[in-house]
Image 1 (cartoon, rainbow, N blue to C red):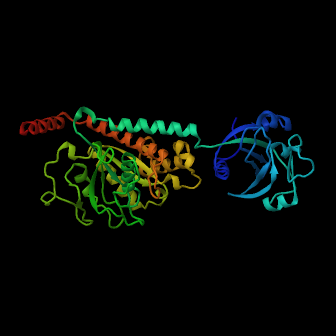
Image 2 (cartoon, helix red, strand yellow):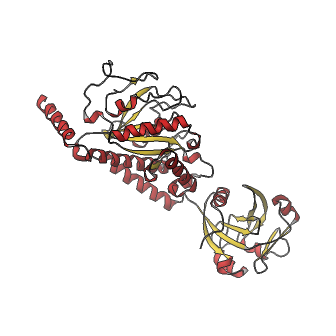
Image 3 (cartoon, rainbow, N blue to C red):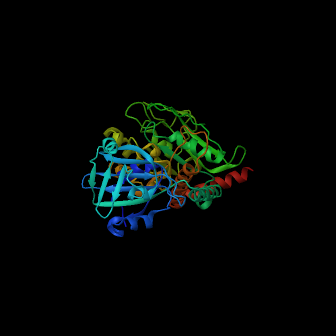
Length: 433
């Protein structure tokens, strides 16, 4: 049994009632009879009643529908284009809409006649006719997406992800820490993602990496961030590497990318927008070890800016991706700022990959930039929050775990001569000791 609501209409109504809609009754399936509706839908908690005429979608939200049959103020609504018109009516319960309150009606439904009759004040506020004939009627239970049961599941998953990352060991013990390069346009959320990951393991929101409030970016240096488990805990098995963002103007010099990937660029190197680092530079690492190299690349994009990427920016991203592939690296995409997209509620983050706007953004990235849909991961950075949010943490930790697995794929695919060099290095370290 499926609702007749479009996805956009459903999201608009979810925002209206601040909850998930669970379909209880559909007249075409259960019968156009008042008794049938009341039997299936009474005492179901907050209830949304939706009516479909040939050219209108309208109805009522009953915020309380319990066995006490308490009457509370209800909300009438009607779609007008993409907007919703609203008006409050006097206290009622679900039965009252079907003639159980005598002649004092403002919104009276006759299912068998497929007719709704409204007061003059109601039709004026909702821009409808006094008598509306309809084709379908649906009733939904309004469920809290962030109820205790759901949040307990989120907390359990968060704990599981934290444990998996804390105990992770890079494939074949070739390196002690995985290096993940964050690469993308200026202002996409690279530094914010690092701050968000550090916040989870620190136990409170932190802002070590500076984040800009405009599109010019803050990072001018190449930074490699090792994160400790807690304030005085041991270092975690990954390093997040942040650099200048890509830009049509003063951004990361494209010729710097292969040097970063191969480990020639040191921490705190000051980028020159016009000139890449080259052999002979005072800070150039001549003979980088495997542990100095990048093991996974995460391309970072703001979900609200995908459509605005210029042809020049698209070309730069594709060129950077070619360099990544040439180095044999596995790469993923981090999609940020999805929680600020139109119609996305906080509760949607629990099943964010099922949200149609997010799917459309993933498809746009796939179409415009060529990344595989399965490699596009959704994250939610801390931007203005003061407290940790377990739902955000789950998204970010899930993405981090995927990146560690991607790095394992790179390490497992290394040719024997490179792993042999790693073994010789370890042997020389032990001999010096």
